[in-house]
Image (tube, rainbow, N blue to C red; front, side, top):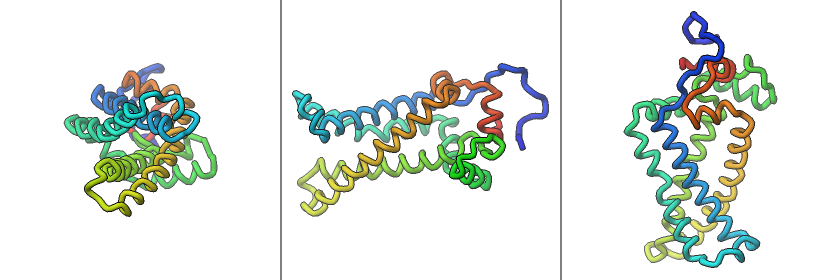
Length: 208
């Protein structure tokens, strides 16, 4: 059941989904993550590694982009809207279980996928990528400052860093694929506005 006001909005009405600060955080984080993924591919995939003439520069780009990854989120905390979105992403309700069951059944009917501002899949992705980023940052620092830790720690950090990087690449690919399949969601991140009809269909519990 929708929690919106009883008076229906005129067809074609747009509502604000994201503020400028929220869009800035997403774009900056996505750019930094993209640099990390691309430079990692250049460093670890043999067919691409041979194309890199200045490997040291690629290594430095990878390190500094990874180190900067948490910065947009930390700066975004100054935005009230961004803090509110973090609270939405961090809270799971009974409707999220319904959404997940429908997703597992591949049931795409909007009536079977109730969602607030963010659906259960987006909440799980946000929690996973945030945790993975922190692990990548920690293991990356252990690999960077080699003189501070014993060899066994650095070896373990390298193993975790490399395999988690592969997992992140796969998950990011799925995330991008989902975004490509939803033009209205992309419009929301690009302009901050979405159509009311889309919001009512995809996020019926969101009080936009």
